[in-house]
Structure formats: structure tokens, C-alpha cells
Image (cartoon, rainbow, N blue to C red; front, side, top):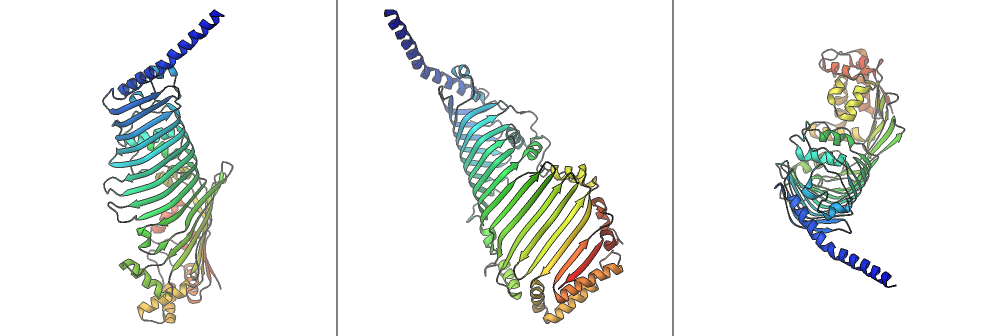
Length: 490
């Protein structure tokens, strides 16, 4: 019995000594981390705290200038995936802030982050990350755009369960224009691919603004794919203005537009939405809509007053427009199509465009995917067909009436004059054929009577994109080359 009591007491004493030693170990670890951060003179930190049981490290007033100039008021990490023995000896993934090292943590919080690099500045009120998993990444050969290249490489090696950033202000190089974001949230980021993203209270303003030039209340995106842009930005050869590659997304919506830049001209906009669906790996269908666009120029400001006078001459107080465009990308059939793009305005017109490119080869897809415009010079892709339909719903009458008001002629005289000019139109350096004359006569009759004008392009054979430049040379027969025809329906 006595032996049991003695053994139990010994265990209690040893455990007590261990618990009592934890604060000493944490203090020792904090000193080691601080020394590691400041070792090479490229960073300073005011204070470091360590919590061994929670695998927590907190940095206060960190200032680093390895890549750009970075200051952080407070940086706290919980749940570090790091051996406890290393933490006890002061060795953590934050020691010395070694760029390129992997880092995993359950939770990260950053307060008062300021970054100055490449003549630009970022100010971030707070940043919170859950499920942070950064793999090892390359820090050599960053090139002249060091901060951009390093950020792209970090993003390519990173996966995050949830990211939230608040009170962000970005100041552009040179002009010092400001872009402010109230909150930015990302869910399920995985090495450049994003499950969902939301942005609220976006404002863009010039230096020392009286009011935002542009404002957007909310942006939501799902299925965002940044792998191509991150690969391009990671290259030391990348420079501003060079292509970054195609950005993929499943859905996107933007609402709550405003700002002086729009209100100055009396412009309001309801929403912009885009969605893409995939049918296997080879076929995708996309649709983009712009809804709630209204132009109602106020009676102030020279340009706005000029717009108001034009609308008044057309018998309009405002212009309302909607845009709806759908397209299909079929790599198996080597085709890309504009199924139907429609621009419509009540009491004005409905204009729709459709068309198809055929023989889309590897060079064409490289130009589309990588943004390599030089690849278009090698492609054999061709225009297979196109159709433009203009359904007049009052636009002709209103436009001719406005023109007549400024020219001193009657509306009937103006209509006859414009139709005559169309019939007599002889474009310079173009072969004038009977087919072209017929096409122009159809357009002239549309001006005279209104209705629905349809212009078709059905080249036979399909016209290669590399051949379209011949339209700029003297003497081409546009009608025959493009297979042009026009019809009029009343």
C-alpha cells in the first residue's frame, strides 16, 4: 500500500514539475523564434509568444523586408503541424521566416498588414485563414517582379479551407489611385482552383477623392480556376502586359454598381452574370447576361447634357438595354460557336449575332488558353458561318428624326437621302459586283421601310482566319469571299 502511495506521489510530482516547466519552455521557445527571425537582419519582431499545448505562435509588430516591405501588427498561428520536440527547442516553421518552407496550421490570424512592393501598397485590416496547408515552393530566380512571382508560387503551392480578408486598400503605382474592398472571402482554395469566392463593397477612387469613381456592392464566383495565370506569373520572364492565360469559372455575378463615374452620365446597372457548364472534358457551354442597364443623362456636365440633347431629339428620356450571349466550345468537333448574342432595347431594336469557327486546331486553342496571340498566325481555324439580324422597333425612325432636326430636312427627306447614300456606297479598294449591289439595295430598303434585316455569311469553303487579312488589300470581292447575302422581312 505504501509503495502504491509513493509511486502515485512520484507521478504527481513529476507531472507537476512538467507543468511548471511549460512556461519556462514557452519563454525559451519564444526567445529562440525571435532570434531566428532577426538572425540575418532582414526582419525584426517586437515580441513573440508561444503556447506549446495549442501549438500556437504569436508575433507582435513584425517588420520584414526580404521581398518588398512588410509590416504586421499581430500574427497568430494555432494548431501548427510541427513536432513538439522542435517547438520545445524553439524551432518552428516561422523561425527565421524561411521562404519556400512548407507550413501547415489549423488557424491563422493577421492584423494590420501593410505591404509595399513594386511601387504599389496593400493595407489590410485583418486576415483569417482556416485549414492552411502550404507545400514547399521554389524561391529562386524570381526575376524583376519579385513580389508578384513569389505570390504566384505561394498560391500554386497552397490549399486553404477558408480565407477571409477585411478592410483592404490597394494603392496603384505612380498615380496613387485607390481600390478599397470591404470583405473578401474564399472557400476551398486548392492550388489555384477555388470552390467559391465573394467580394463586397468594392470602391475605386482617384487620389484624395471626394467620392468613389466606381462602386460594386457584391461579387460572387464559384469554380474559379487560376492555374494558368499563376503558372505565367510564377515565371521570372513575366512582365506587365504579357499574357497570363485563360481564367476558368463556373458562375459569376456582380451587383450594386454605382459611383461618380456612372452617375455623371446617368448610368445605372442592375447585374452582370455569367455561367459555364461542362459536358465532359471536350464540350462547354457559356452564357453571359447584363441586366438593368439604363442611360438617363442628368442636366449637368457638358458631356451629360450633350447626351441628353441627343436622346431628346430621338424622343427619348432614357435608354434601357439588355444583353444576353450564349456560346459553345466543342473541342472534339474542333468548333467554337456564338449560339446567339442579343442586344435589345424597348422601343429601339433587337440586334442578334451568331456564328461559328471551324477547324480549331492546337494553335487556336493555345491562343485561347494561354493568351498567345502569335499562335493565331499559325492556326488553320476558319469562319464557317455568321448571321446578323437587326429587328427595328423604332430605332430607325428615332435616329432619322434626330438627324433631320440637326440637318434642317424633313424626316422623309432624310430617310430617302440615307437610303440613296447606301445604294451608291462604293467602298474604296473593294470589287463592286452585282451581288454587292443587291446586298446594299436590301440594306437601303430596310432604311426606307424598317422591318427585320438579316445578313448571312456562308463562305464556301470556310475562310481561314489567316486569309481574313486579305480583305484589307485592294480589290477583294467581299461578297464572294464571305458568301454574303441579305434578306428583309416586314
